Image (cartoon, rainbow, N blue to C red; front, side, top):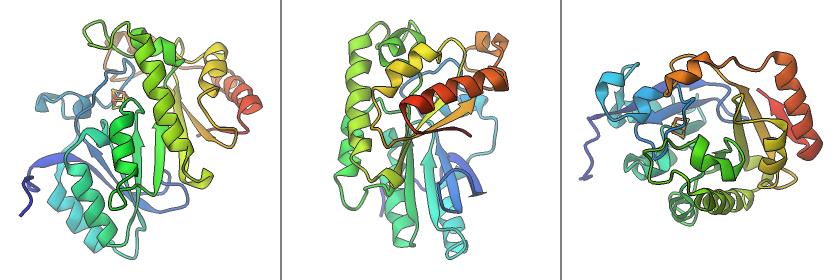
Length: 251
Ligand code: SF4
């Protein structure tokens, strides 16, 4: 019997998605818990442990498994996201069961936990089939812009330069069609200058997917007052990224 309670609310289940797992129709499970606090994060309910912040009903892992069994042969992939899923004790259990049912596994990670990522990748039973890694800004700016001043990582820019570089190398070792990097175009965090620095982490054949910032329900309420880039501004930044990494595009 598993030590984990599979009947405890654990994450948000998206029953079907055509956009989260390249080339597959998939289900997604967004697990609670994250090791960092991005000020623009709009998944507050997943990041903060207090259930008072839950904005959507949570499903149990048992409910996820029932869904995967029901949709066998219809869905071909499962996206395990968060929060930060590689921190979550349910992740190995979910990977094993979903794989047993014939699903391909994609993991979304924030890239700040290379040792845990390596342990997952090096375990044949748990190795994800596809990895998506976030890059939020220039690595040396994470320590002040991504972590609040109460974080133990605040001000430790060397730490983030090291862990992001290590994670990017682990992801880069995957075949090109089984990996991607993702960036939210938050004004102030992602400028052309940042793009120059961020691109240095990526292999030349990277798929670099950009998304527009949404200024609502942000973890740091001050970010609700920041206007997203206009389409023209976002397009210009992504065009610049494309000049450095050909596989850059705006989703
Ligand atoms: S954006 Fe992702 S990495 Fe950042 S706090 Fe939210 S869930 Fe965590």
